[in-house]
Every structure is written in C-alpha cells, then in structure tokens.
Image 1 (cartoon, rainbow, N blue to C red):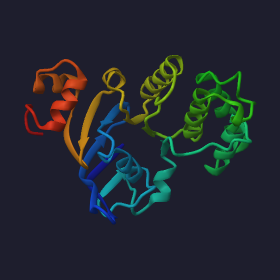
Image 2: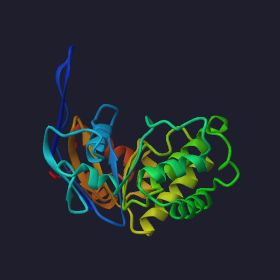
Image 3: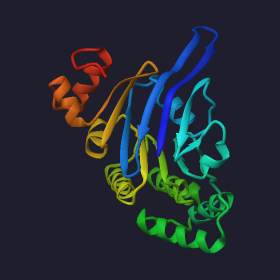
Amino acid sequence: MLQARQLTKHFTDKKRGTVRAVDGVDLECKAGEIFGLLGLNGAGKTTTLRLLATILRADSGSVMIDGVDAQVHPEKVRSKIGFLTGSTGLYLRLTPREILAYFGQLAGLDNATIARRSDDLIARLGMKEFADSRVDKLSSGQKQRTSIARTLIHDPPLLILDEPTIGLDVVTSRAIVEFIREARTRGKCVLLSTHIMHEAAKLCDRIAILHAGRVRRVGTLADFRTQYGHDDLDDIFVAAIEGNGGMAQ
C-alpha cells in the first residue's frame, strides 16, 4: 500500500545551517497492518508523515501509494489517504456532522454517501451525544473523535495518524485505540506515529525507530526483543537510538 524509498527533506536554518530532517528514509506498510513510527522530538517523524501525505514535497526519493507515484500524481493519491495531525484545526462554529458533510463534499462524495458514512462513523466513534453540537462546545476528546471521523469520511485505504491519542483521557484513548484496531481488521493500512510506548507495543504489527532523520531499526516487537535482549519497548527504543546492541538492519 505504501512504499518510500530514500526519502529526503532538508531545511535551511539561520542558526543551524542545513538541517537534514529526513535523510534517506525507506518505509513499507501493507494493507491490514498497523506500522508504528517511533522517535524523539525532532527525529523527523512529522516531516516524514507530511512527505508521505503529499503536504510537503521531498528533495529526493520516491513515494508510492497503492501503486501511484505520490510526487508525480499527488492529487490521485490524496483520495487514498486519511491524514490526522494535531496541527489541523476544526471549524469551531460548525457541528461534527456539518464538518463531515463539508469534507465529504470536498472529497467528491454525493449527499447520500455522506449521510450514510457520517451516521456510520458517528456510531462507531461514540459521537451521537455531541454530533450536532458546535465544535467550540466540545471537550478535547470529542474534538479528537471528530478529527478522526473527518479523516475517514472518504473511506481511504491508507491512514496516516500523527499522535492520535496525545493529551487524551484514558477512556477516550481506549476508544481510539480500539477504532485503530478495527481499521486494521477492515483491511486498512495504518501508519501510526506515537510517543506512547505501551500503545505502540499493543497496536503495531511492525515498528520503525527513527532517529536524526534516519531509520535505525525496523521489525516486530519479537524481533526487537531478540536483537536487544529487552522485553520492554522503552528499553529497546533507548538502546536503538543510542546504538547499543542489536544486529545491523
């Protein structure tokens, strides 16, 4: 579903000069898989996700989404992607149902499809009690559920989720985690960035550890436990970014 080869993105900073935010990243994510992307702040995770979602253009390298070159035909691949990031705001004067209708129209859906998919997402995400309330009256967890529903209104085969449970209470986080599992069951390809190690350990079929713009390791949790001799993903992550132990990728 998703293939990135030697993806690079450099920025120029007045103080630091050239910053190699993404430096030759290779990734592959399959349908029916949750693929985790782990890294410290500044490791290049969000830049990588934005490159994959065609929000940024790479300096070099390639991205293929469902067999389509994302850099040659970005407009074609956007219909295949649902991208969730904390920096994307909601229209505060609209209700969740109105937001879903608006983004459904942007995706070219007809009114009957929008209504059917909106009702389905509202039910699956537990949004019935606030679906017709203005967004500026909602809690942070309710807003996040609305953002996820908006990401899915066009039923994309690829979900790119950047910290979907950050700052949420336990109940809302659990609901979103279960929804991500359900997306995998439905055959979606899910690329998940998170700082929450126990969440990654529970959810991800495979994990890439990103550090200083480069992928240090890719594998299953079982692979990592064998390589590093640790059971806990926190310990594995620290060992990977510090270059302690493990086999070469």
